[in-house]
Every structure is written in C-alpha cells, then in structure tokens.
Image 1 (cartoon, rainbow over the protein chains, first blue to last red):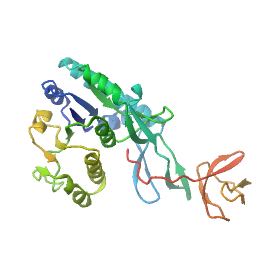
Image 2 (tube, one colour):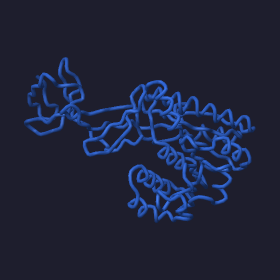
Image 3 (cartoon, helix red, strand yellow):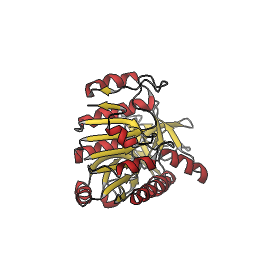
Image 4 (tube, one colour):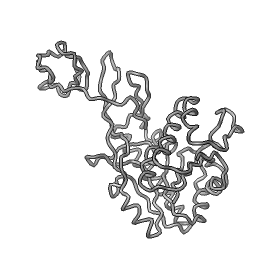
Length: 263
Length: 54
C-alpha cells in the first residue's frame, strides 16, 4: 500500500504520474494538491487569497466562505475531476473524493487566531482545521474492491462544515489509519535540497533521526514541511520518498529511488 | 454594560467596540472576547494555536 501525495504546483506532470500509476500493482491512495490552480482560478474570479498575521507574527491563509468555495472549485472540482478522468483514460478505476464524502476525513476546526486590526486585538475565526481521523472502513472498502481513491480537500469538521486543511497533515492522518509501506511526495524540485538555490544539491538519503536537525536548518514553509515529515514517522511511516513531480516518469523514478529517501 | 463571565465585574464597552474584539477584565485580568453587541455579551477568550497553516 502506497500513499502518493501530488503537489499542487503548476509544473507537476499529471499525465506522467497517471501513466506511471497505471503500471503500479501495489494499491494506493492519491492525495491531490492544487494550490497553483486555486490561485489562478481565484485571480480569474476576483477572489484573492487573504492572509492574516497573528500577534506573534505567524502568517496564515484566511479561509472564509469564498475561500472554501474556491477550494471546492479548484481542488475538489477541476483538479480532482480531471485527475480521475486521466486515470479512467488509463484504465485505473479511480474514485474521486473529498473529506466530506462519507465523512472520509474528519477534522477539528481551528479555535481562532489573535490579530491586530485598526488598533484593536481581534479574535478571527475561519473554516480551517486539522484532520483528526479517517473513515478507514470506507477507504478499505474501495481499495479491497480494486478502486483507487483520489482525495482532495476540503475535509469535514465536527459540525459537518467543509474546512480547509494542510495536505501534509492529511497524509499523516491517512498514514495512522492505513499504515502504508511507502509514502511518495511529488514536488517541484528534484528532492530535498541541501542548498535550496542549488538543484544539484539533492540529499539522496536521510534518516528519520536527521529530520529534527534539518528542521532547524530550514526556514519558512520548508520548516513546516520538515515538521510534517517528522510527524509522519511518528505516525509509523517506514519510508518516505520526496521526488520530482515534473519529470517524464515521476512515480516510476520515485519508486526507483530517485529523489530523497527518508527511512 | 456587560458582565465579566469569570469574576462577575461590570464592564462598560466603548462605543467603537466590535464583535470579536479582545479585552481584559479590569478587575480579574481575564482575557475576554466580545461575542455580541446588542445586547453586549462577553466570553472567556479561547486558547488558540498560533499557526493555522493552510
């Protein structure tokens, strides 16, 4: 069993990924990103991404109702449907799902964030949260019948609302439920780079115990990614491959060990 | 006029107060959130995580 996390960058080779998946005999679940598509669609619709800065300086995306609409259009709609279509054209019997369907990914709504606005301190709340559990029975039902689940945000909160969530956190929750032997993360880089400005500096192998030290070396969004990787191993991951999603055979190359292998 | 849900002190809200605003009870120092304006209502502000992510 594999979990294949497909990044949402604009250069990810989706047809190449699906062509590789069609030759894969091991069952898998796909988690789809679509951030570039979301931003592009948002611009076309005049729905710009809103960011908030907390009183202690963390930046977060503000997921109001418009943002959730946009997620439904970009992630659950266009990206998921087109990916499932590609799968079907390659004889993969894919089933596209969001966390809402069958309460597949249940999350807990974020409690709020403190921001400064107009000289006041305000509590802001939105439709975002952290995944907490997976409807494992539904996923296994599909997998055991030979279907290939293709998952996209939104997920569902305790009250049944659609909420935004990080795909890294979703992969962690899936791993806790499914115990995949291998997790493949396809990104817009040849792997984890020792020097982020040098694409030749791919780190071929990393031990899970190195992750904490690496986390201290990196900044910004990458720091969050490293933390997510560390949590993935805490969730029982055996092997994670971070590989280039832009090449001709992204999945084949990743499974052949090209990229960064973390054990 | 509203009441601190922690210590019961009476708190007068400024005229430009908005829903979601955080203020401190002048008596017990609890952090309070304005949950409504008409009539005014206060609740203890929740603990929050700093980083929502996306």
